[in-house]
Length: 236
Image 1: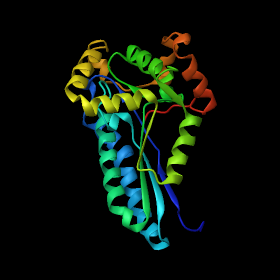
Image 2: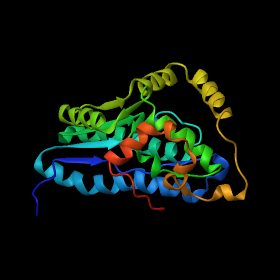
Image 3: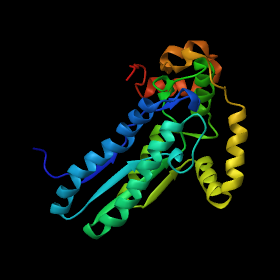
């Protein structure tokens, strides 16, 4: 109806935050459905069309969590690792068909999506550290700037793109000093909240928890929430 498909951008995502003790099979399967199987199905539908028309562009938005595991984000990291591997394999195998695949690994993004993230464990504390990190000006990037960089990489047919200086440093450090990075992640995990009682297995949206967090801690993230129309949240 609308003609050929030149570009496919797989950008849909969800995130669940909490200790591994509270993450069950359903949490991992939910993340895999959105981050891996959905891109897999779309790529499977689009690639034959692109081959017919002589080429195209595919952009897979993975994450720094798909390059190195982050504590309290196990389902997210596992599914993003899967997407990163799939995207890198596509890049190698589709190059001969003039289909350029770009794998994007964003660090913390100041999109305001902390209100739509889901939390387990000690819900209010998990929300507080995640929301503060997502809006921190020195380690996060706003959505507009990220979008411009992603589209530029797509136009150039760039193989990979890592967003934020902090993310590039972390990925490089993990590649050069994996054991040291492992110790660092263990150290970070000590300062994150431990598992909670049985109620910690309940999944709560950030929109339910934001009133419990001081406004100054999430001010930049809250501005992004309004700008990017992230206000409405619905449990999956």
